[in-house]
Amino acid sequence: MARIVVAVLTASLGAVAVAHAGPADDCNQTRDLNRQLRGCTAYIKQGEGGQKNLATAYLNRANVYAQRGKYPLAFADFAFAIGLDPANALAFYNRGNAYFDIRQYDLAIADFTHAIELEPRFSLAYFNRGLSYEARGDNTAAVDDYRRALALDPTVEAAQKRLDRLEAH
Image 1: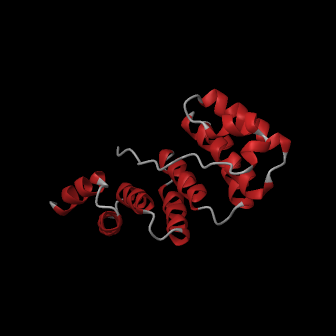
Image 2: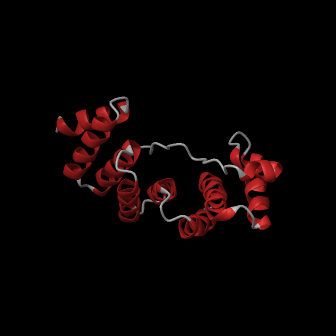
Image 3: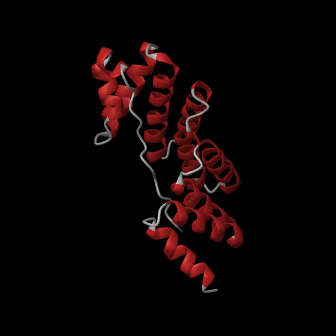
């Protein structure tokens, strides 16, 4: 099975990081998932920092849960993140990755599509949507998305490889 390409999973909590250096710093780092989980949870419990920063904390925590295979917790946090910041393309993109991981391809496609609507130059969202289409058996749509990903970012080598393979058939 194809492995989905992951974009930058962690967004910064912004200026609030100075006011809440401990939890914010922990939530923003990605080397130690336990520390990130604790930091994001502490930041969320503080309930301070504005909607976008709280959305980022929920998103970062959702990504940790997804990496650990705790999808119900991840999807709950993705929902909070999207509710707080519905214009955050990364929230939809990362939730799409989680749906892909559990083989919910239609839901993954919907989220990748929403991420693209919010950020039309998001090449990895096109690529991952292509993977989802391909997994669902829609190779025509997959080829279109691989081409779009490459047009936006020719360095997405995995898109070229998948495109070459599909076009050879």
